[in-house]
Each structure stands twice: as C-alpha cells, then as structure tokens.
Length: 160
Image (cartoon, rainbow, N blue to C red; front, side, top):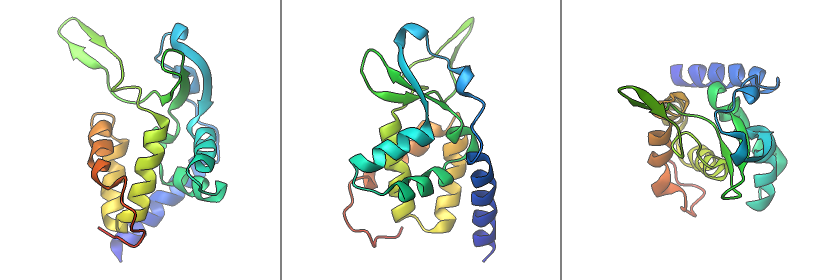
C-alpha cells in the first residue's frame, strides 16, 4: 500500500506542474539551423495519440505520467531528419570540452511508445522505479532502452 501512496503523490505533483506550461522551452540546446519548428511534448503527445489510434484523453493520461523534467523538456522538429525530438540528457564530457547530439535529442514518438508500454505493462511499484530512472538525465536513455523488448507486445493484459 505504501507504493500506491508514493505513486499517487508522484502523479499528483506531476499533474500540477503539467497543467502549467514548462519553462525549459527557451533553453533548447540545438543550433537554430537544425530547428524547423518548436512545440511542447504535451502537444506532440496529443498528435501522436491519433496516429496510434488512442484518444486524446489517453494521451493526457500518459503526459501526466511523465516526470517533471521530461515533461518540461522542449520539443523541436529536426530540420534534417523531419523527426520530432526533445532536448533532454547530459552532454558528453571530454577533458576540455563537451558535445551534444542524438543521445540528448531522443524522438518524441519513441518517448510516447515507451510511456505507453510502461503504463500498460508495469505494475505500479515497478512503474514508479522506472519513472525515477527516466527522469534522471544520465539514465534517461537507459530507461528508454529498458522498455524496448516490450514495445511491440500485443497482450493488453500482460503485467510485469
């Protein structure tokens, strides 16, 4: 029962923030020459819901699951690949410099699919732990990759 209380508190705190426009939109770490358009993850999730045959209400439910740092990450249309991405993740550190790239600019479509898979297949206690890893910038891509094996499962009743 303790895990249910923690999960409920976590979701409520994210819901309160998700109702307010995030403040990271202006902090996009992508050269403007690569940005064709900008949007919030919330808006992109609503559009993706239609593509996946989900309702807008379900897309709103998924955005409420997103950890605060992820939900406030700016989304942008990559001019080169014409793919919607979001800016999240730590840059690669080198002795005298740092670099950013695709590990810091994951696809919004994959984030949607991963959150959907986690929502459908993880019990609440596992979901809470996974969401914590997803919110950690240094573990974000690891958490996304952990969901890859179950992305294409068809059984809606499978609970891990």
